[in-house]
Length: 140
Image 1 (cartoon, rainbow, N blue to C red):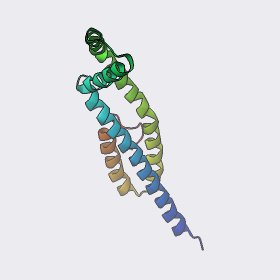
Image 2 (image 1 turned 60 degrees about the horizontal axis):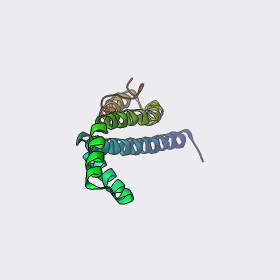
Image 3 (image 1 turned 90 degrees about the horizontal axis):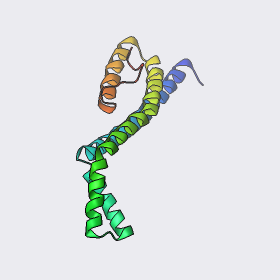
Image 4 (image 1 turned 180 degrees about the horizontal axis):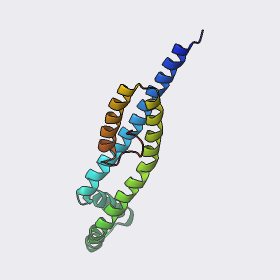
């Protein structure tokens, strides 16, 4: 028999599941962002090296050509880093929107004391995962 307690328990379970899924997505985004930032902060050289190896394999570049192409890639590195950073910021928007929606639904099933603790957790999580730019309405 389905009663009010069972429905509440089911809603909490669904909320916890949604929160876990949102956390998983946010953690994946944060990990990827962390890897990309680390990659980009090292002068982009891993990218340049990888690209140079691919070009060398495909084109059989002469030593002079390798030197010229390496200089071009190095000169273009700041713009590539800027563009990659912008892309990472833009790609985070759908995850922020999802987290905001999921957090609002989870918050709705919590009592006032739990809501306060949840708001602190959500803010800390947003600062870590989104580097200080929490979702619009995660804290109330």
